[in-house]
Image (cartoon, rainbow, N blue to C red; front, side):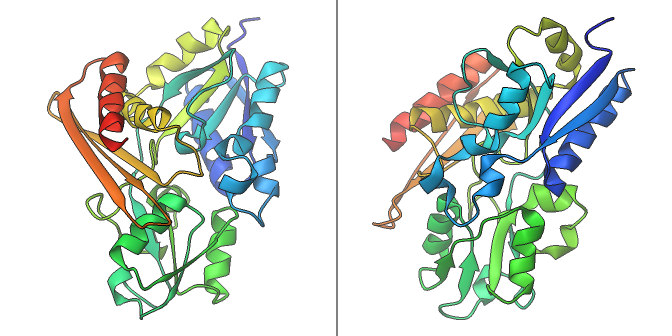
Length: 297
């Protein structure tokens, strides 16, 4: 039996993660594969009373999925690429990066149409240090409070009146058909996204050359190159959840325009850097990312 005829996808069990896994399932079934999902609850899903930066970072969302790949229970894992640590463990590979959904952050509120409309001292929910620092730069008077949990949990906390507004990734809301909850999107000039925000990554064991060939047609090259440039900034800065770091790349013709911002949550200082060069390969993209990181250090 051809190993690619039946594929098991390891996935977290949140509604958004299942949407992402089912999206890949549909694409693989169109290639003639039979596909099953292996739903898993990760440590990152279980620990909701602490910020990620205090309990181990983004790797908490992927470790159990990688264990399933390692021991053969699953063939591939679908990740929101912004949740994937900058360095994959030895023996694992990123087989594909799919076309990016809207990479921007979204302002969600039941009572206010934008960040500017929030009253003095209003409570805004986010557990992202990046978002917290960038929101404070726009509105120093606001009170930032932690907000953990999956997308539905976060929206439920807003609806319960715990926050005047919350800030979420626009991509997740749009994928789940919740675009109507978005009152405003932050343009990247206002609030730079996290590295690879809005992109899906497919992780496999590095020795699965059969899967590399199967998944290669799913690669969206502009998104892949942008994600590698953004992740290179984060890697060079030692990027983790404990670091308020943003990076966003887009193509202007053959040139990639990469911007990054690094904040100090205590001092409230934000350093910014940008660059624009011709990018054709992953090596080009990563070189640009490293050069931008060097400007921030």
